[in-house]
Image (cartoon, rainbow, N blue to C red; front, side):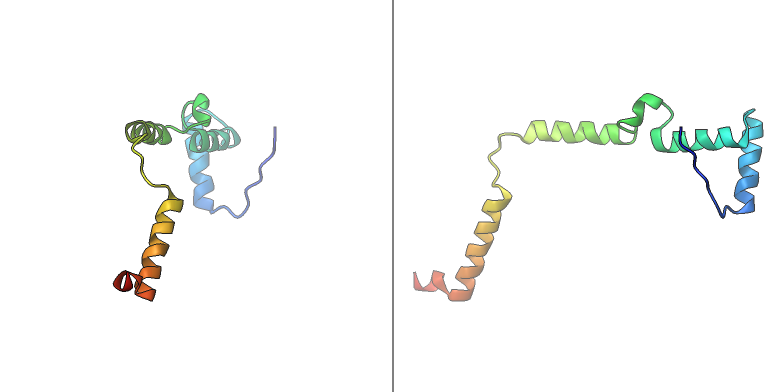
Length: 98
């Protein structure tokens, strides 16, 4: 296990941490560990790989990809080439001469 030292905390924050820990029957250090774990990994330790807030977004993105796959949309390279060609035509007047 690693050790984490937090310096320059406001006295009110420390006081609230101690009160919260006492309300839950934990030491301030144990409460601090729990706050960090919950904030970074969610309430379920198994959700560490994909926090709960990301799961609905990931599902919507997967559904969007499924619905739009195979539509034959141009690649970014093709769009860039079309854009460059249009700019070149506008600068050289190629569409007027041709």
